[in-house]
Image 1 (spheres, one colour):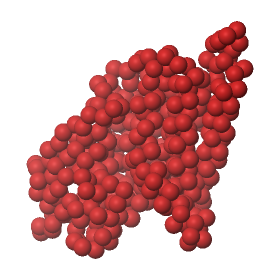
Image 2 (cartoon, one colour):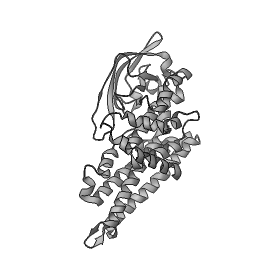
Image 3 (cartoon, one colour):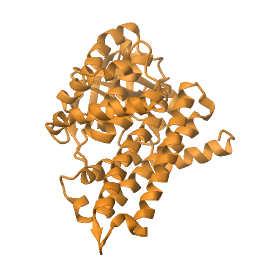
Length: 366
């Protein structure tokens, strides 16, 4: 495991200059192409597909050195994996070559203004019109929107049946009727909104079967959820490293900070949290790779919850240890402070993860 993580950490370091040239809040196409050139998207969309364990290793390593590269990799994967897993041969032949090189920027469009964690309540309509479907509605807080070239879009084909009436579509975003805007966030992550006004999408662009799109979404998220924890682990490790190095060299009242119990114990607790979260993350990834679906949902929820909450704590403690230095706007910790908050929300908030864990516990699956 360590070898690939360290390889990705080195790659992330090499990509920092490319990442720094990106415009905040917008897709950095040069960075996406660079990741494609490094072969990372071929790992995701190759013949054998990617394992959850490998996905975790890549995201953890990139996050240690370049969170922008990690995020660009993950979002491209979220948008493209449903095509890779559920697309017809013609759909895959049309879109995956560009996704592998990074020349086509991908997106995963699930969230709506009234449907976030409750994905079964999607309201975007997809009405059949001969050999096409007309998509009408809004998708919001979508990574890479509105600039992505191709999106996996989830829309309701059968009303009033909850999750059973959702269908997944591949949608080129230059189709007539697609408009969008950027949503400015506290981090530099590219996020936006799309409005679909009767957008005509061919029936052959359906991923999987009509009315079975919820399964497409959940299969994709089951693969990616443990790796959200891996992303958090990479940030937590970097924050802890910075804090430990500072505590060993910074003196106060004639002694290094590392000799103050109030500092040392906080860092010790962070290290324990990282170790525990690492086991949960890779245990969940291994369960996915072994096909152990009965316990996967609960294991993934525990992994994401533990790792993201630990990362938030790690960054906060590190800034406290460094004091004013940690708050300098161009510092690594200040950057991590804006980056670490979002993973506790997307792909299921921490509160939703606790709900899932409790539900699986009472079902006897944990």
